[in-house]
Length: 77
Length: 77
Length: 159
Length: 159
Image (cartoon, rainbow over all chains, first blue to last red; front, side, top):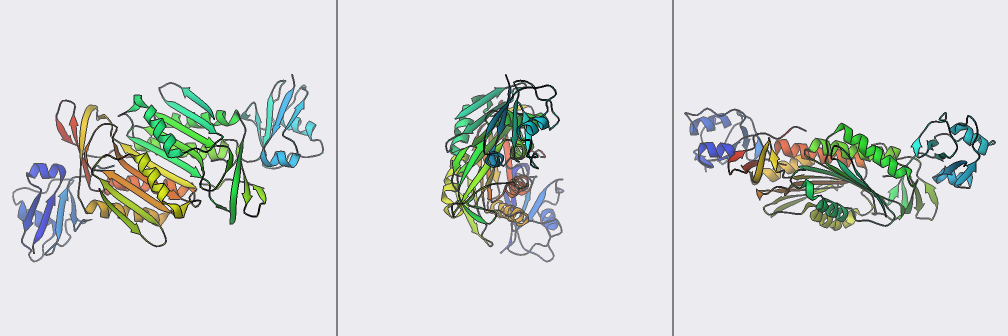
């Protein structure tokens, strides 16, 4: 398995891709998933984060097989 | 001319009629219109009153040609 | 079917209709909205309320209902209720339809629809019109229960 | 067209649908309500919200819009929003439909309909679902302006 990462909307456009895969590891959190994938790019402000399709904050643990998502404020409805 | 009086809904059923006509007179109000038509029957509680199809209280003056209405609380919608 | 249309500054419009025969609120809504060609692309929000007849009231099974009104005053009151709600919020268009006559369970009683640019105004005005209508518009309901007994509805529920 | 139906205690039901193609909200509402045969005579109140695309946003003329979403999470969030609103008020049935894909001015974006015995619950739950959806459901709008320029909508209006 691994950790599957999704980017949506303007964040995906800015990053230039819609997904990433990261090997699982000890003590990973939403924040460290980002920093491993984007070591030179701080997480932009206002970005929302989800683990397995539920909103979770940056300190939420991330485990093997999890789906992590980063996206801008939602604008539906 | 004269004063035209309407009764609606349960009040009309209780009174046994839907309208009355009263000769105009000096200093008439909604309250005195009722007491002239129903000298032996005090105005029942909760009754709403209108003059010329606008809500008006019991002290509102009533003039020749006016349409006065007495009715119970409304239950539309 | 009696219908009043008012065209007032600042460009807000409304249609108020007292219906002596059954009406289909979704169909009426669709037809009315299609007629709003000048508003296409301008309304971001439509809030709608439909009141229908329930088959139970105060614990009793209800077979049918007669809705009486005060012709003339009803339309005048509805117009005032709509105008007053529109003065507090910016809306584009309002449609109010209300049944009178004999109704059976599930029959639509009232339709209130409000079109506006943004959702807050549509919601607020729709609800204000429904509440105003329930407390001020001269309509009265008489129920026929399942055993044939008749009774006037004394009071609308708060809400 | 992806559709989820949930049947839960205590008898409250809901349907949530993400629509990749244009839909007609009044028609959808009429069809859905007709299917609610078990509720005939039980709902006294239906509150409906329809969101449609405006041709202007933040002072710019908008030619078209693309609505993106996060498949799976969207449905899950909508279900939670509806469930949470239903826990505070007693309602009978909820229908939520939301467009994704390319939209043009006047196209319906969202339909929220709530059936309940009395009006307060219908109004409150309808509005709570609309507000929840606007702040939590993972949808994003990208606008194409009349000069062809594209921009992401940054933030929903409060309200």
